[in-house]
Image (cartoon, rainbow, N blue to C red; front, top):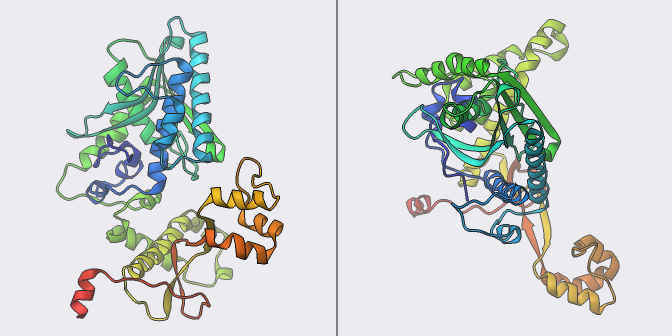
Length: 396
């Protein structure tokens, strides 16, 4: 299932955008699309939660009791990566809990996948992956966030200093809504756990610094979104804004970068190159956005002169693994390597091309990957695109 508890307008996960650009709250609040990566991440968090609860002996009375294998069967994006990520996350949380347990007077409080309300508007809030409170060192709040993607994330905001805004929001409202009136707090520890790329980092600060983040970053950012004339500000955060394709500021900012690099490379001074390098990633993304837009239009049936759509690659997939296993065993070949069915290339080597064609081909299908836009001179066959129904009706 996709996330269901995140605020649309003031989503903590999009706070790196809206705390910098007020207009983004208007452009992004209708974004309800969830791609495979988002669904994978949600399901990975679900599996991680169950693993943590099992390891720490936590009973979640709000949910139906299921064993781990039952949970996995209900995850349609489950694979080896999810297994590895969820186990790494659970192991990290258990070690964190045991550490604070060893240095605390009282057993630490732990909250897993906890919905946290914020006060930006009547529906704002999000889901805290892990919140922990320990009485160690005068009172410590720990927030750990699991990231399942491949782009590195830092617990510190590398551009403006201070906390990563998403983790900062979770820590702030975990403190204000859960901890503040019950326990003393002096320290805040923010942790990013991103096992897929081996990125584990953290940022520590005092409670005073967290409250300063609220006063100097959060409150001013929210107030800027409450006016009628919303200001747009371009920057690295634009990469994650779904409204960038229609944003004039985004276009004009990148147009200026294009003007800055409109001369032969060997004519740049060292100072000019050093000044332009930090802007190039954003400009490259802008060019990618343009190509993505052109590709999407082509997929909708638009024809670009001199270009066509083709599959980026075509792969072969076995449609009936049990039948193929049976065929291989009947031909004296062990079908597993190890624990999994042999790949198509390996099966072909063992059977020979002719026998593979005769015995296995009926159980193999061609799977086309995503479509890409290429020049018409490309030797690959053009993909067949069905135009939207209204366009066909108009043509008739």
